[in-house]
Length: 258
Image 1 (tube, rainbow, N blue to C red):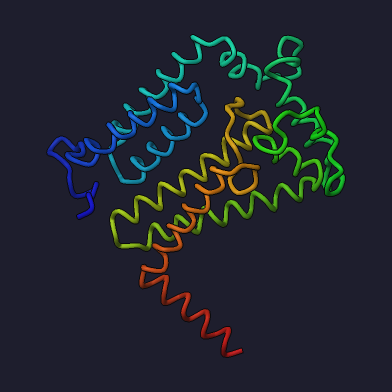
Image 2 (image 1 turned 120 degrees about the vertical axis):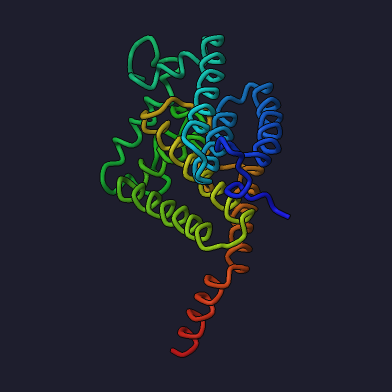
């Protein structure tokens, strides 16, 4: 029997059972991640959990308490690490002399690559920044290489594709009747939305660089496996949802009729 967040509230509005199970598990996972000094992944996990709590319809005060706790933890970890403090401030002006050769190097060269790409880009394989200038060009900063080689139009295509994917996952979440599947697919949609936003925000220097990859595009092994497992789960939920399954069947019939 799956826990239903909307059906297990106490009189004061707080969740009776699900959070008692979810929070200890989330705290344990966060503990292991933060112990390895991976603040970027830690922030991502916190954000996904917050997104699920928000989507579940929980009162804003619960969401606010969680956000405050996360902010305090992130702030404490940043203040106690000079390197993290530099990363959190360098994105404001990566070309500044005090940042450029250190924490500002990646965002500065990322912006250079995006700017040099123009509207149509320099062409596939013609990026200059990826050759030693831009660190982690094949992972965290692959979006900058896309912008340099394919231009603004190429980056817009990537954004449109991600938007369509995330919208589709949210649609599956809305249409499914099973509570577990609904929250799980919503969590996956939040995961992709937050990770794409943070990655592109870091590349364009709108957000600090925290070392988050771009789903399905950045080079990697375990991250790609996790991405495809998530999509496989969503497709499984869609196939078991009558309304979606009927729509897919009707589409196949129309195609065969042609």
